[in-house]
Length: 225
Image: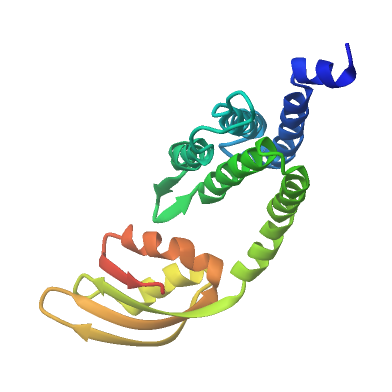
């Protein structure tokens, strides 16, 4: 049997696509696995393989004798893009005033995109994008960490119970490495409100809001933008 007929019979082209999906999805998944993220090695490989298979099917399912195409193959790819959102949403969690899992959700989405590209036969584009995604995931966290350590100035409005002293609030701020640039206190019948201008490492403001709200003498906290 000629090589061309053998390759066509056993769909060796599809096998090559699936192998590339394992390599690219695995490279991204390995980085996620090392960092103990929700979507790790197996998840990213399976997503990429699934997207490849569905895209390959979508390009062939409408073909009839003579090479004519019936229907729009892009419709199935579009359903992959929208459907993968449900899987990505499952990795996003909110708690303690912080949202986590966004990077994992974005990774799932881009791995599906890689699968679509591979399934459509765009090997070079998929390989280049896969390498770039791996570099971004592996390298940029260090850059983000440095950025989050930069000092910033933030305005806060802290409403407390009557008589709450500034020194008490200052202790909480000092524990986060945050200092008061300026402040004004306004006493009312039901509360004491502090208008503060604070400065400190940007990363410390991520937990300050919830720490202040957890105090029994603090009624509400506004600011942080």
